[in-house]
Amino acid sequence: MHMGNNQEAYDAECAALAHALELAAQRSSTPERVTIFSDAQAAIRRMASDEPGPGQQYALQARKHIATLRRARKGIVIEIRWCPAHKGVVGNKKADEWAKIAAGEPNTHGVEWLSSSGQTKVRVAPLPRSLTSLKREISEKKWAEVRQWAGGRTSKTKYRMPKSQKPDSVVADSTKRLASRFYQLKTGHARTGQYLHWAKVRPEAQCWWCRCPTQTRNYLLKWCPRWKEQQKTLWREVYKETGRGKWRWRAHELFAEQRCSQALLDFLTATDVGRIVPPAGGEVDAGSEASEWELRECREREEECRVEA
Image (cartoon, rainbow, N blue to C red):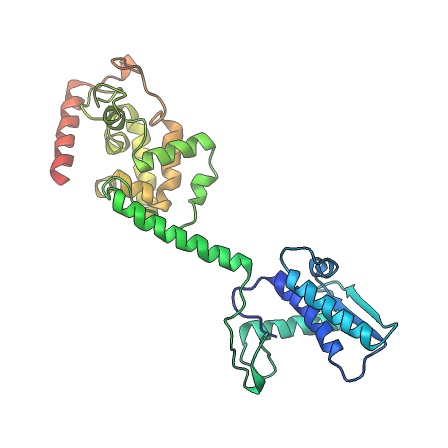
């Protein structure tokens, strides 16, 4: 029996028990004993209760058929027994075989739909759907609406919308503080000189590890002399994963690429980027001040970035 698309295994087990009782109730001669075997303990327990929840409709149908059997024959014995699955029980193996046929080839000879009109097997109602399937559809619809709304309000040069609704598993497996820094930098709302100056938290956007006039995400990931060694490791790993060097990446593109997530997390773990903010006018480490040559190089690169933008 085919139940339709997007059904859960639990629903199928409950429906099978109700349908078996229905077949017994429809027999021309009512038997003295009805015994049904199932390997689904949860479905068996569900038949004993008509409380609201998943499988309730099948529990109510089962009670209806049991009442029909008892009216037809007094003293009838009705049992629903559990049998172990995948233990070589002949009937259980045959039931699994039929279930696979019904799920994979619903139009095969001998496969019935849950409800049909006459002998032509033409459905007159929409395919039944589980609550889980309906909730998933609503969630996906909301996700699409949110993407459309956020896409019109977000600058594509600062943040790139993820392609998938699923979270990045690599970032999700990291610590809460590290993941927080990652997503702050990904959205651009992080502890960088540029953002803090825009938010009026600091009087200027200057880098506090060197004297670069503007401290951006891109600058911290590529050019800040305070983190030269960590930057080399970062871009070596990025090139290994993607085949693209740092000249072909911008910060928002890098954070949107899940293949680079582990390299970025390692970089953040090894540095204080997005974590330490000294008082306005102060320095984190006087020994980390850039030389005049590094400062001039920083300004040239900043000018190049402006021209590219």
